[in-house]
Length: 108
Image 1 (spheres, rainbow, N blue to C red):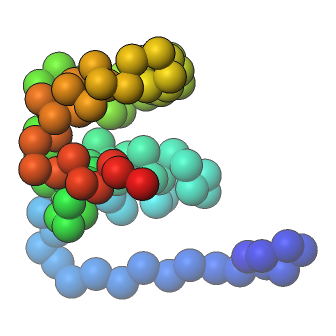
Image 2: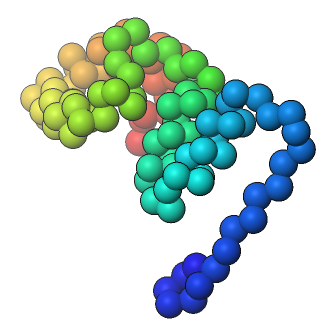
């Protein structure tokens, strides 16, 4: 519920359930923590295109895994900011290399 209001959640499904559906329901059963549930969902369906339209599936990262490497994201963000602050031309070259045509999504 919201605030002091109690609430319940009833989930209905039609058998048979696939393995993916079982895992999703297990995440909902095992926790009321929205962050945990979102993390489980992300690991099950994949992040999709972060700069595109698809909301699920494989993302084009060659090395990183958003779930496995989540603790590295603040450091990577800080390094990216430093690169932009100290060498905007180099930052644009790096962005073009990895984003290609999707670079327009990162422009202000």
